[in-house]
Image (cartoon, rainbow, N blue to C red; front, top):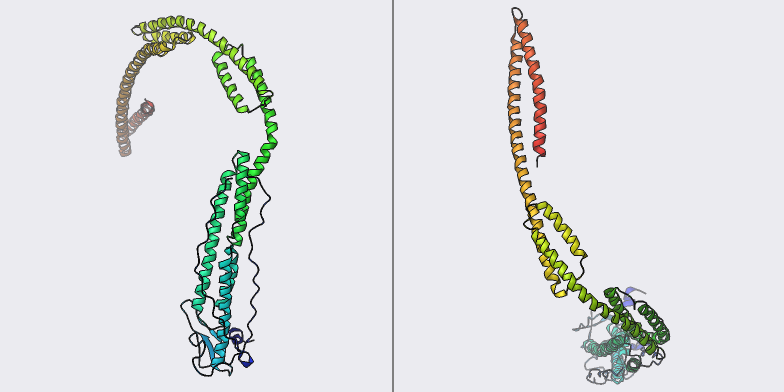
Length: 494
């Protein structure tokens, strides 16, 4: 078959053409099978009704081609098509529709050919009207989504003549109606999911189970939100239900075990409390008793048959300890008064050290007083901070005087070091000058040696100059050694 043969639909002999059979439309998926009945929330708000869609007029029935065609008058479908110079029938462009070639006349009249293509368009109109009626009457409009898309695709590629803009506009309106219904179903299902997810972690088992069951009944009454969304939304909804009922079943299974565990923990707490009744570490034990009380409250219900007896045993042990602590606290109050007098004496002793001429000896005595302070027991709480501030203030003054004395001595030492460094700098400068002079002498003597001529006293003068140069060079080595020592000392001086 050529490209033109595949692209253009030819008219059959006799002016009629059999319509290609449309693909079978599979039934739209209904809602998922409901899950097993589950006990559960209060009914949610009723599903809002889908928006009203204006009723479309029924399609105009197509005139059968078997009826004789009038030989005169307007050519049917001429407003939707045209014939080019090669006798090829074309669709006219519309606002929403791009026309294309349909097929050659092959000797047939334009009237016959156009009537054939118009009849094909009328069949599409009839299909559209039937789909509109079905959607309008359906409670679950969402199941028509795929069928609407298939019919729209069929119209866009149909070899027919007619008002494609109007027909496509009707199908687009129908598609929007279906999508609007699906959006409403999707929103309603997401609302039910949100409610289920908000309930799935609750522990009011009976009430929540009733609410979950009502949510399930409402879900059954909803339509499709699209095949893909239905599957995803159902998984989320069923997941929330399953999560709650699994938790409920686990809770029922564990209740007996938890009561046994609570009994074991409370019996252990009774033993621990009874072991601490005679403790003399009152504060530590009181804290331990409070922690055990917190553990008791967190242990849970031990069962009606043992809860009261265990509590009475635990409470008796706690009461015995706290009664002994009250007696000890009374004695401690008497002891605190004696401690107060001792700490006052320590404050006075520390204050007497402030004016001591032996600054560093006073510092050592203050340290001994601090050690003694630590060994004295508690005093009445109202005086504790006051006495401590008094004692610490006196000790701080003693230590401050010692610190000032150390600063004074360090200052004097620093001045001494500075003076020593200054002297060393002067010595170093003097050595540098002396070295320079010696080097000058050596240069002159060497020049004189170089200018001596043989004869006369030249040899005697040469020996004399060599002696001088050797003696000065020996002294230069000593001076340079001393200069290096001075420079190092100056560099390392604090």
